Amino acid sequence: ETGVTQSPTHLIKTRGQQVTLRCSSQSGHNTVSWYQQALGQGPQFIFQYYREEENGRGNFPPRFSGLQFPNYSSELNVNALELDDSALYLCASSFQGANEKLFFGSGTQLSVL
Amino acid sequence: QKEVEQNSGPLSVPEGAIASLNCTYSDRGSQSFFWYRQYSGKSPELIMSIYSNGDKEDGRFTAQLNKASQYVSLLIRDSQPSDSATYLCAVSPRGGATNKLIFGTGTLLAVQP
Image (tube, rainbow over all chains, first blue to last red; front, side):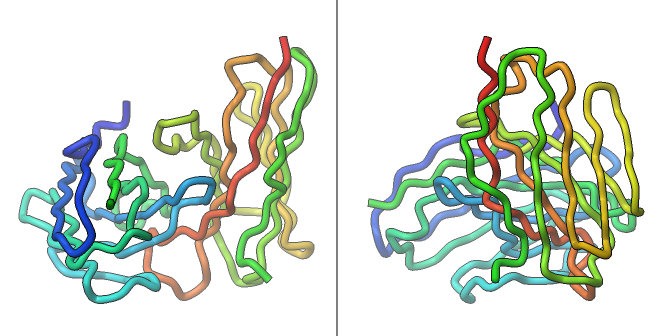
């Protein structure tokens, strides 16, 4: 167990809806990253938050947004859901400067119908 | 050319044998390299990190890095059926956001009892 918790574990939405996924980082970690993992693919970097600000973003549209709170927990919001957004969403926490070692939560499986 | 390439497998080895997993990457300036293990339906788990050329051993696992050839590998000695999983190679790109990793698509390892 990494100490990174995500909720919910599973979610079913319909196209066009909005979704919020939540993540609590491991104690002592101040950076949260979000990744999307489609079936049969490796995780893809969505964005990272450090000190409550976005600190790097991958090739994802603006309808993917996030927040980090003072206790380092984080949210991922996705608006106007599309069928291709169906994937496992992974939150990873780390300590800034610790050679990029990421510790993943168990993920949220999102299905968009 | 993909940024991080792995053979998708499956790589099938008998119990007790050495499993050899390979990964190549395109960004010559990459500094940090990781191997994650992912069981079916679970999140990735960090098993090895390597930052300099050569070998790094941890129990039954050995990571090998050759920056000149842009090649990183993972050897698993005395393979066990419990090692059956997808192994993800991840690379930290030059100039990217701290803690951003680029993942390969993973190699499925099947250890036959």
